[in-house]
Amino acid sequence: MRGWILLAGVALLAGSAPGWAAGKGIRFWNLTTATVSALQLSPAAKDQWGPNQTLNDKDKEVDHDERLRITSVEPGRYDVRIGYRDGRTCLVRNVEINADAVFSISDKDLTECTRK
Image 1 (cartoon, rainbow, N blue to C red):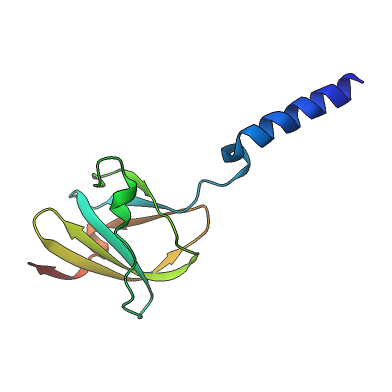
Image 2 (image 1 turned 45 degrees about the horizontal axis):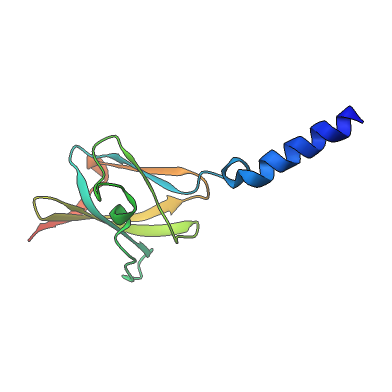
């Protein structure tokens, strides 16, 4: 009997806390030396840019060594467009994004940088 009560209690707790059962989702880790003010993803080589993911952050920017939750993106290969406060925009091509995993970008990954 006590086993059933314990099992029912565990099931009740698991049902009330969906975050325990779900994965952490996709996250971006900013390893560049600057604060990211815009981050958009496009399926690799498609130039179909999605929304600015930095809007998912409480201060709408991603500081150096900060992680950002990425939403509405399926696992796959993506081009990433990163914007900075100073108007510089850079691309990182063909980034593999996995479910419930972190992908990082550092300064050495940045290519095709332009300044507005």
